[in-house]
Picture 1: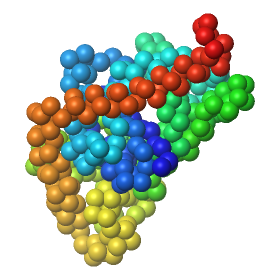
Picture 2: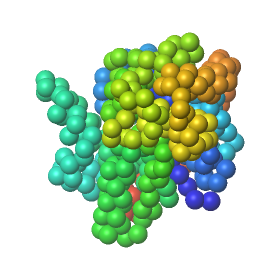
Picture 3: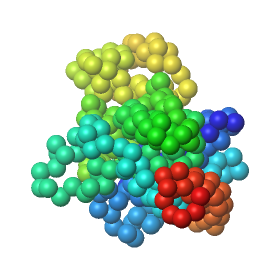
Length: 330
Ligand code: AQP
């Protein structure tokens, strides 16, 4: 079985973007791939976090993974910081990556452009190297990611190839898997911007645990355009294109079928139906989440995942140390 690795940062409650761009695909992949999924709590530290909230969110993410249909008997779930090999390998990779290539990462450039008070953490610069460690420690063949992470997977490949070139064939060079639809679910109020869980305004995102009446209102007040046709046109009609994407992914229909269905209907009717589809998806997930979060399941699953993942990761970093001539033992 080919192996896949992916993670989610516990920087906020999970959104419909996380579900459609990542979790829904993991659920499909779990039968055909060996899936390692982690809560990327070290990555969360790139921006300041409240420790009580962070600790709660770590478990929330796992409870949500399970509520969305991930089967702990098929998937290995763990918390990144509980496996020190991630930080250790990241440090080794800092000596196999260049300042120039990290400076060219689009996400980093966007963040420094927005940061005006010189208080950006060094980890915002180096986290793509930690991401390379997260992936390469487990010899992942594939990395399912959203659009904006593709460049980081390219960097991961570069680091793996550089290490292999210098020290012999040691790392599997992974391929990114970008979903053909849903790789970038957009903000409902600003549909040219990605839907993000840590946004200050809550009108642009739908949280998986949002009150369902509130979710309906968010969809009904989503920004569209002054045209009246439900048509997929990302450039000229980004709001409608985003809503069509969400609708298609939640209802397993094609964009074309939805365009035909709503050809002579108003935006209001289209949004109202979509609001129902979102409710039908979220209601059972929310019920399951409430059951799981109060049970011992999350800790059990994470303990088992920790045992399995840490064994693999520890062996890999120990061998990498040896290849680099570190320590005394061969
Ligand atoms: N809007 C989105 N559309 C499609 N995919 C998305 N993902 C996140 N948002 C969308 C995918 O979910 C996985 C986990 O992402 P993450 O939460 O670890 O990081 P992120 O992409 O930085 O998410 P946020 O919500 O934007 O976080 P903050 O606000 O903290 O920066 C990834 O596969 C991601 O692509």
